[in-house]
Amino acid sequence: MSFLLGRHIHCFFRKMRHSDVDLVVKNEAVAYEYPWSKGNFIDCLQSGYQCWVLATEKKILAHGVISVSIGESHLLTVCVHPNYQRLGYGREILKLLLERAHKLDSVECFLEVRTKNDAAITLYKSMGFSVIGERKNYYPGKQGREDAYIMSRVLPLP
Image (tube, rainbow, N blue to C red; front, side, top):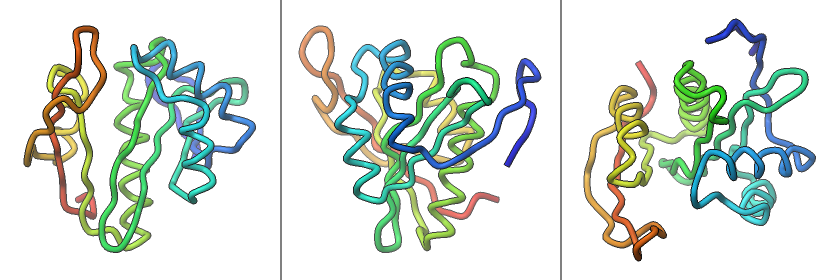
């Protein structure tokens, strides 16, 4: 799929390749205080998870990973390079991942999100996710561990 978004940048979705991992890890490093490692992405690719990028001809703007198993899926990561945040790219890659999960027979999607990540929580709620629980001390934090909300939504998207 090819489209224009935000700053009228021509971009497209494609499956993540092993050759993308170094760029994806760089995006994670500038976007997150506790980024995924190269090994995390290689493991996801080797496990057959749905790993996708939103790219232009020259760069990767966003990426996401979702695992799909019997009847359910788990959103593992969504990342948008900081230069392209708040332009709709996060919503678009999340939408793609949820559609892919549904095509693979997932009827519900789960995720964890830091309880203090208001931007992500707002995005997830706008996409139909609801908080269904909390995991104490789930994420690494500056002063110990941080809590996470567990969120879910039924698939498919409307």
